[in-house]
Image (tube, rainbow, N blue to C red):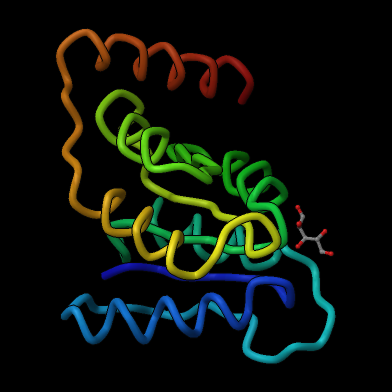
Length: 147
Ligand code: RB5
């Protein structure tokens, strides 16, 4: 199950991305926003991040204007590794090396076609483990130290 969330800036792109993903057979859970009314991206970043943290959803995708606010908010939730991506290389590497569990993208930065491309890469690239596990453990250690 993929958790999706957006703010008003990302609504149209999220709707198109969900339609694409469902037609490809992915199961999607939409955590809002559901209207074009101005809203606050942390509310949706938090809902998606908790769904991924709890295991209710396997991965998350967040869309705002730039992808940056969503990623900052989502990364406050323990166990979340959210990457704001606008190119395919970063989307691939954040899975291979960072085991990112949420992808954030900016509707004012990239096209819906590019989002679809990045989402496919994000959903279909495996974590390499090996030396990268040690580095993720250090990130988890920072979370523990910071409470
Ligand atoms: C909303 O105007 C905008 O600030 C938001 O979508 C996002 O880009 C924040 O990072």
